[in-house]
Image (cartoon, rainbow, N blue to C red; front, side, top):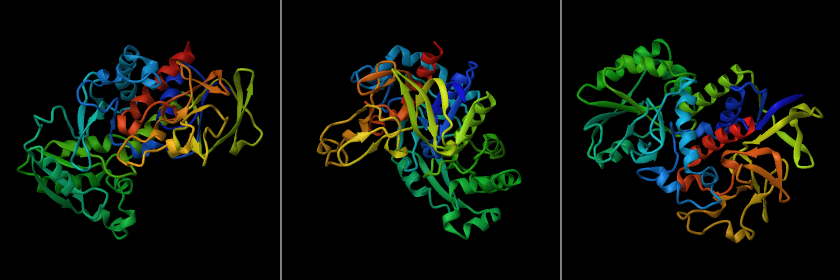
Length: 407
């Protein structure tokens, strides 16, 4: 089978790339081995996790950083497209590329963010909190959200907080087993007429407050349930992220995949790329676990397999390698240089990843493959956790590579 572009990896990077290309009429295939990091999504995308203008910090990064390969002006241009890109899938985002805001974490802390889903709790300026008095609600029996943590964190910012737990008869079946009381399972119940019951319970306990904060346990498959609940609740309602699995993350994954397939893309879920055929300086085809000897050919290929977490790169006792094609990987030679014994310092291994040229084309044995690109977490040169830039790198490198392919 032949395609214009084949993307290996079906998470955020792979889907952004595939959708961008399919919108322009390309015949695209995405091969996805399974669950992606979107299942851990907090409801916010980070560009660079500093206070103020993230572009100021980006301009000072090392040349090896993916952002430096893009350049500040290119980042600004690409970033302006992101809200429109996601709004087409009914995922409205708020925020600015030139000024970070702050999302409210499950611990009640304020963390810099670039774009946040509009139903989430966010703060533009910590010195001027948007609320003076709030109530923090939880679903009775839901253990992945702690109202006391949120209330304590916000109290340090001068916000008066009360807490309460809501019980609904519709949740009794899953409440009997604590392992079933997860955000995704609760969200499957909180639909249709149950939202009416939930809104009545919320209104009953949230009278003398300016706003209501609660965990994201609504809107697993689409945004409609969120909109209905917000309309029925009498006070402004804002959501806060929970421990994984992530309701907004799964919803985002579903909406992105749906959009890709509506555009004619083929999404092969639960399959793994085993090997590829390289001829000269180009990748000609790949073969997957579920399709035996069948070769999938394309003009272009995109590697979006993620980092260690999703086995996009793998560490053995003496080396770090890319497992599908044996692509070149940037990593420190001696194992003792892979980590720092101080747990709270930046860990060198977090910057390990596939080596690319300035256009994100991959390399094998020092030679650039002219028709294969890498995007997102599989790239080398950045520490997504310490820098707070994982989502930004994933989205912007994917948009950039799609433009390179379309040229």
